[in-house]
Amino acid sequence: QFYVQTEAGGETLNELTPLIEAAVKAAVPVPHVVENAPVLGLFDGAYYRGRVVEVTPQGAAKVLFVDYGNTEVCTKMLNVTPELMAVRVVGINCQLEGVEWVGVEAKPAFDEHIKVDEELTLTPVSYCSEKKQFAVKVAGEGGLDINATVASSNVSDKSLVETKRHFTLNTFLPLYCSKFIS
Image (tube, rainbow, N blue to C red):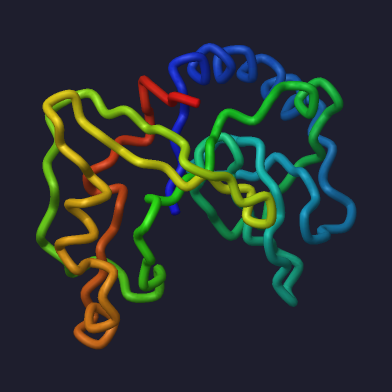
């Protein structure tokens, strides 16, 4: 899976900045961490909107940063204000249609990267409400079919796990997507 943002998402992120700054200034810590709770999680020195996906026995939480798609174990979390809750989530959860991934346990040793020097278009094919995820086709302006390229390169093959090789979609697909066609 991977996350993208539309061009309009950049504007929304700009709207979020003063709201996050106000919430941080108020500094209301999360009293009790529970799964699926909205939080402001600390990542790389700044707070971002997130959702708790797992609580550790030590009281920390694995937080999914909903506007970007990355996760981090956080020990410092603040309450999300109603104003922050009112702003739509920017990150769009996607998976390449027709490609099964081996998982993220085997971190990158896969050196065959697909370099894309052109604008990409994501076209939703279906939506899984359980995963809250779009299955998408990704194409370049020059006719490059990312789905077919990935599928034909056997990066989703189980043997990649056995050899500690893993294909990371983010190595070739930018998080910021200029076209998301519905």
